Length: 271
Image 1 (tube, rainbow, N blue to C red):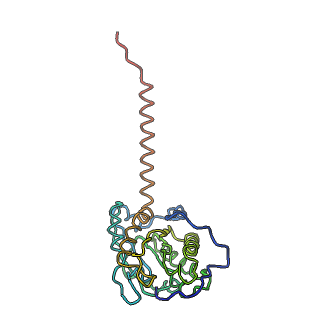
Image 2: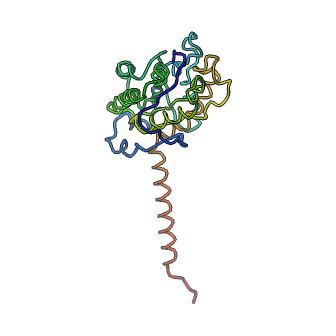
Image 3: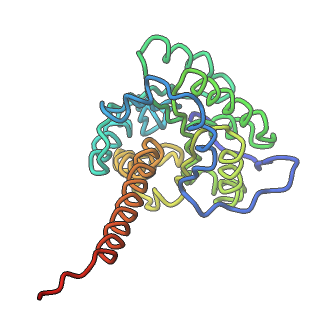
């Protein structure tokens, strides 16, 4: 993120979508899980998950427009995932000023040169919006869709992260949280990711944001990484929930059968 906000935001020519209340959206997982299981997805059950966090300066951990990548959220996410029984190696790849519209070559390069990832967490689009706040966001959404399609075509699980509560969006007549909610709803519905996380409310304190109102502070990145852990864990391992539910159902059936057999056994009477 690298541009100041100075004018009004035009989301789209179509009617806005009602604000979302869910942080984690699984709506496209049935389609994703219907695809043939790739080697990377099979490894997720037995080895640490290799997660690529891909994005702009917020992923790189810039705390101001001139700070450089000082405090990425990835290490905090990696540590916090252990509390949710997920062993993971989280690699942060963030480029200051990167827009979704020009991110595809960078993503392809990282996927080709950094090894075989299991999943990709993509937080992008704010530079597209903030650099052209009067333009519709359809182009940004199309670019995000291309990124998630690229991940899925390589066998990775793709996770879209919506826009955090940037104070910049509340300034200069950008309609604040209402604009963010509408953008995040469209990312959820149109990015074509395997899952979606809405970060609304994860960074409520002024101390989470730097003086430039765009980047997080070190405390903000630490809080953000920790808050992402629970929804990321649920999105990374949905099969674990299915397996647990299946085991519980099987145990109930077994208990029911044992109870029925016990009721059917003849009562032994003494002479």
